[in-house]
Image (cartoon, rainbow, N blue to C red; front, side):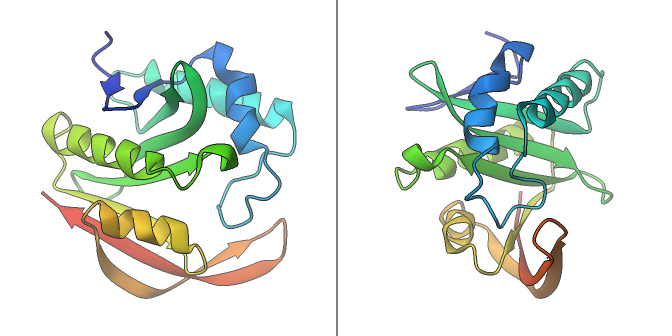
Length: 174
């Protein structure tokens, strides 16, 4: 297996490939996703551009953004990523799970695995995550993976809907 492939009890996380466009679009194009900064993708072409960006990142010696698909029994059910932050050895983690697979612990399982990868392989000092204050599911994942609330005073703006909302910052240190 590729060094960047991560296996958990139920899931396989692997770097995004060009053949993943339709599988990724099945969750990234979901119009019900309304509390994520860059989703939903409005077209298959938007998802294709994202996949091409992710592959470009993986082809770098030190990717700034490591985008994975989350697979269950070889089916893409979501995505998870680690992005380098401006603070040294700090990474931002994010996840999205297809609505048909939510509430099964898959986001928590994938996030735990990626945090372990960040600390043990990338030698991260901190992993952090942001979420919309209305996104109780993501906030619960952050708590389940051991993150602590750092800041509850942030805001985020969604240009597609013209909505401004509160934002939480959670983090876990090695």
